[in-house]
Length: 195
View (tube, rainbow, N blue to C red):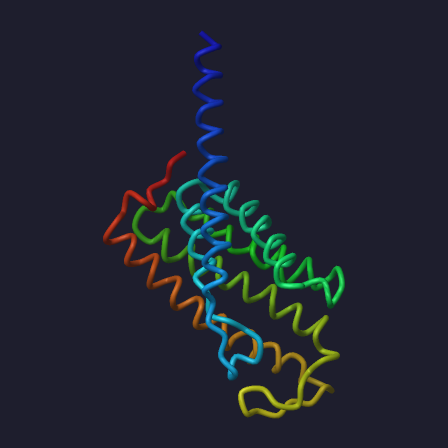
């Protein structure tokens, strides 16, 4: 009766928790393998979003968003992200990584879902970083980024945030889309909804 249903539900929930922990750990490890180039001005190219995207596509946003949030907390603690205050922590780490988990809203779209979800998750992460750049980091707008000169007045912070965050997020997005597309074609079961 109801005991067996509860047992099955408990087992499924436990499986989801374990899978989430594994994907967060994998994302954390991949974050150590990030590539940082001088021209990225502090941004980096990393595969750390891939496990969060995979989890989101398998389990949905209800698991992907909290997983991104936890990864953001870990990354902030390891990266020394507290230097700019609580708003930077909330935007650049917690909300930015949680935004990646929104990919899971597309997890039941069989054909286009993985790529569309990946694009949406990456775009929302970029939007959060962009807002942070315009609101928090505007006081630190450098005069030179990617060889371009920006003024701290007028539209300077907006253009700076667009160029700076767009620079590294474009590469991260392209890599994420390519990896998810390849996995969808080569190992479709890995991305199949598990709920």
